Amino acid sequence: MAHWLMKSEPEELGYDDLVRKKRAGWDGVRNFQARNFLRSMVVGDLVLFYHSSTNPPGVAGIARIAKTVEPDPTQFDPASHYYDPRSDPADPRWDWVTVAPVRKLRYVTLDELRTIPEMADSRLLARGNRLSVIPLTEAEFDAVVAAADRG
Image (spheres, rainbow, N blue to C red):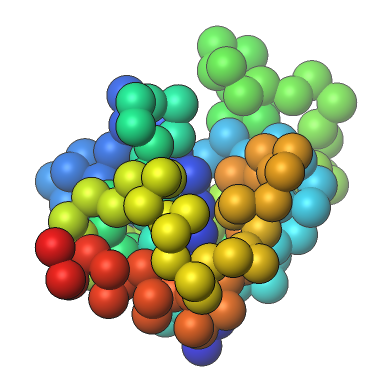
């Protein structure tokens, strides 16, 4: 099983929204490296659900991959913010995975994440990182969950 961190703006899809919906497609990924990470996910992989573009940003819960990669339908919808006119339905450029909630966590802010020793080398904290999907080591994942559980 792999471990991931996926960023979402809470106004678009917050962790509570995911709990209410029970599952959701992770749409709007428009970076090839992040898309390739989506393509390597398997059912059952665990995800730290991260709220970005909010004050403060941080980890809100745990999700799991419920369905593997398939074409992101928003790339074909001209009314969507994520529309990509260069994407061909016969050869889609962009994918999504379906995620389902596992457990809400005590909110672990970005500032708190910076204090967790196991996160020191995490891509999340790397300068210039803007990827919305990043792999985590098991130690990184477990350390963040432990920090949330400690309260």
